[in-house]
Image (cartoon, rainbow, N blue to C red; front, side, top):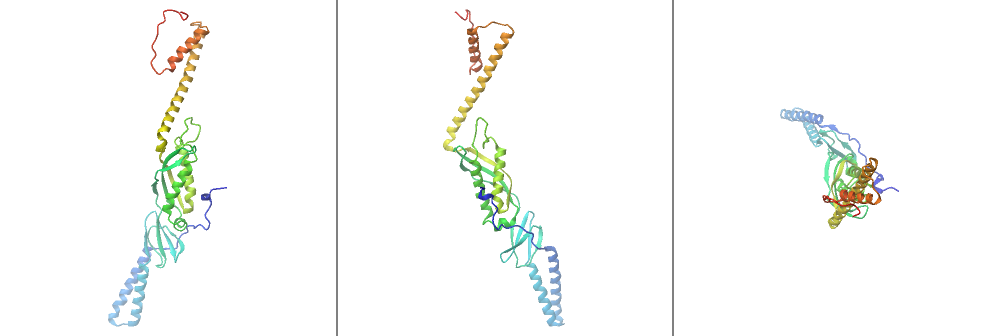
Length: 301
């Protein structure tokens, strides 16, 4: 069974190229028609072919008005969705001055990259600990037809899906793992960020939107448990440090005893060996500087 947001939408719109014309060419035609109309109107003063002149001038001026009503401008990284009485006819991505028949409606949409930083969201991680998360997402529209016609408000849709994706990823992993044996939100930024991007792309594909980059901008325990978790982390750090220290000290003691035996520096019976091990462990594992004690007697007195 797959998630519903990974399923392709039924009757999804698809962007197609609109049949439009260059505005500069139509502007030239409009100027020529305007000149013809002005010329015909000027000839009316001489009463030469009055009816033909009136009809010709009226037709030229009407054509000029018709042409001027069809101009629109497209800026770089911008598109215009063309519709005819509510029917999608295509998208024009050609920049500059453009022209289409006046009864076609034009709806512009930006194809530029958008940067969005989400609000801080409280999420329960894999272990049930409440944490706060926020993400930064760079997204852009790739299919104008889907963005305009398959969702009600594509910008609001992006905000909602980012929050849903953050909650999904936040509940998938623990916040932290001191043993470094698990993938965690705090310790695996690149992997978790890549999964967040994959999740967002799957959710936003229905709206013709892709995600270029994303990552977490805030990640912390919720305030109600932050103090307790900090003490826990400190305790785990102390235990781990002690474990490492003891393991190193045992290795050093073993090495010292082996060297003493191999070089015949001193012969140690079991009791003297135990005393030396005890002293070395105190020196190596103690938190304070050791103070030497001069023994004027013997170990047995």
